[in-house]
Image 1 (cartoon, one colour):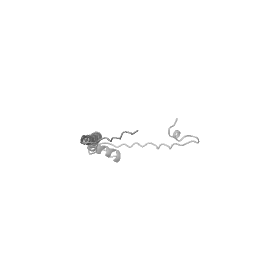
Image 2 (cartoon, rainbow, N blue to C red):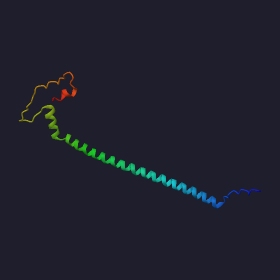
Image 3 (tube, rainbow, N blue to C red):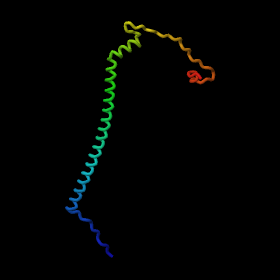
Image 4 (cartoon, rainbow, N blue to C red):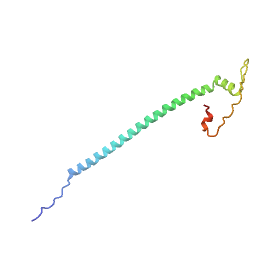
Length: 119
């Protein structure tokens, strides 16, 4: 008994066009997916950077307010009074001196925080 001969599939011009079209379609889908992924990443990065810009704008506003306060006469006067003990003409400076507070002493067996906070 004789077996029928195996016939190999033929690969003609129509199949070649379909293979090339499938390859091009695959490349197009791959490029589209890459573009979509990159667009998503860029939008995410843009959103993050916009949030950082907003935070920096708030910090800038706070620092400008602080700079204006530090340049004001009110601040200069408060520093002159508190650190240098200066007074305006006609005012009298009063220095309140209290006795020194004794250092906390620990008794044997007492925990360290118990000496700081009396019962």
